[in-house]
Image 1: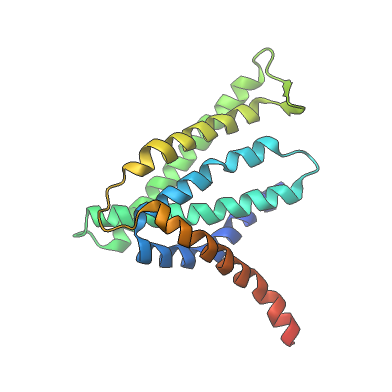
Image 2 (image 1 turned 30 degrees about the horizontal axis):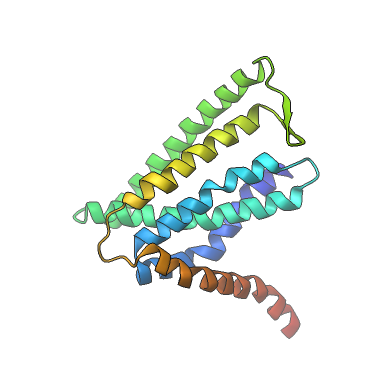
Length: 196
């Protein structure tokens, strides 16, 4: 069950949001999208920190949301990379980006696994905080949260894109449109069934 949640949830989020983020990037630029999605992806670890053994439904929501914001991050990353080297074919840059991202993910997973294993044997590692049992994995999620917040607050805002719409202005328009777009996509199966 956990494998389904961790793998299917994000893929569903990516599937329903990729075209939306593509349209938003064309309309507002990369900068507001990367700032909004960086902030969104920064809070995802909170979902895992607060998850309990009986909250599978909550984890579906968290992983689905992580796919939505990850789609925006990935699209803006590819756009930025291809704009830095316009003489290289986009397909080549996308392939290089995918390989680099995959290797980075593999290295991060390996290092995180080793750190989790080491933290497991540290004295006093298992304790309670506000009624939640804290173990070694919670500390890893906490570290991820801090790193992602650092990126959202200090790195993403430094993206230079003079033609982009100011972030606050774009957010005021994007959030209602995003909610409407997701509602329409999620309602399609119900609409199809009602016409059968």
